[in-house]
Length: 341
Length: 222
Picture (cartoon, rainbow over the protein chains, first blue to last red):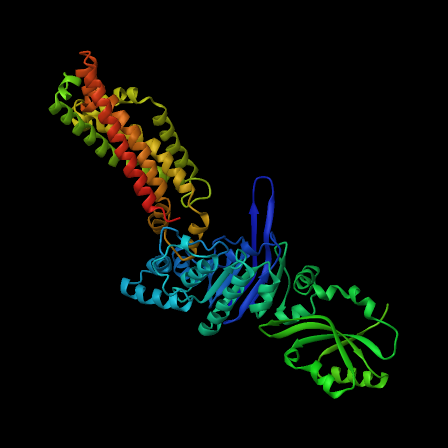
């Protein structure tokens, strides 16, 4: 468990002051994947560096497993850092070392014996799926493979927490998904707490349990990923959600389908959590004498269940239509009948 | 054939002089390598935003380096005569040339080392810090290995400058091919000796360049 309290970072130059992180307080539970999202300049990179004191906080405290990082001496901090893994946007591997030696590096720092190092590194190489690449140099690897080395290296000393600084931002979408899957499987296998910084909502949606949205050094919104998705409060959060579900905001395009006829309705179905897995549409089609025409939609899985919207046109007798809609409401799906404004 | 082309050349003298030049280059090279890396590290590490950030030490080191780089080598030798006499006990022979050679070329090499260190990815240093690495671990396991190609190509360039310095040192009594070319060649107007000395020096330079290029290519895994 990580308790962050009133954490602040003020950069002071001769000409100006920049409040990179402003009084941030968060609690992160053991074993959860916690996302921090924000646009560039929001202070999220500084924030993650305050957690292992790569940047010295101006104020506040970071308590990891009951130990206050901010009160530690340089020596204590070095020891503690061995238990805080970190991966980076640009991987930051040593090009002069092979994959094996890169992963062995943190073990060398921790003073692990050569024989133990060998065993541990091999185990990690297998864990991240790089078997056979031991003696290859990073320059010969693809971006995704490099990040796998980065992850293996970060896990070498069995960390209590893994910090990910834009870990997938330099990767293509497919590789991003592979790396995210790897992070989820490691999180489950080792019950490892992960703190993840990103500017991509997709990343949050795919693997995070909880999320904090940052803007101008402040956390403007925090909560379960699903809640934040369904009911974004701040403007920034809404923009991020929109990035993921552009359809939400394209209702106008449906105008042509909406009409005043009694035997036809355009309905917005909002799926949250486990409802999304039910075959609601086909149930309705079998049960009622209606025609269902899917107009547009998207459903995205998150760690806490699926989430999405579907726009459908339902044609049928007026009474049956009403029954259908109340049946839909009964399944737990949020239903909204669209009318002309 | 050889005797007709080079009537005044005594091969024993040539080899003797070649060895002297090689000794000077090798020993001064080792000294330059060590001193240059120490100075280069000091320049880099004490610079703004780096591991041992320290304005004063950085300023002092940079000043020393700049001053010694500014002194023409031939004057540096003369300037260091008392120091050499004290250190080596003589001001003649190839050993006596070493202090001046090292002090003359180490500052130059230090700057090359510094440039190489600056090229090391800041992210890699940050990564090492995030793993809990100590200062000396970062120096010996990150900074130096990661800048090794620059360190090697830097010493190659420096060694070649050093060979030319040994010739200058030769003229004022250090021995070697420069000495031979000047004393036996130029002074007696035997230009075949001067020419052959030149050829020997050029060959040494080529060999050094070749080895340096080869090493830095093999070592570079980027």
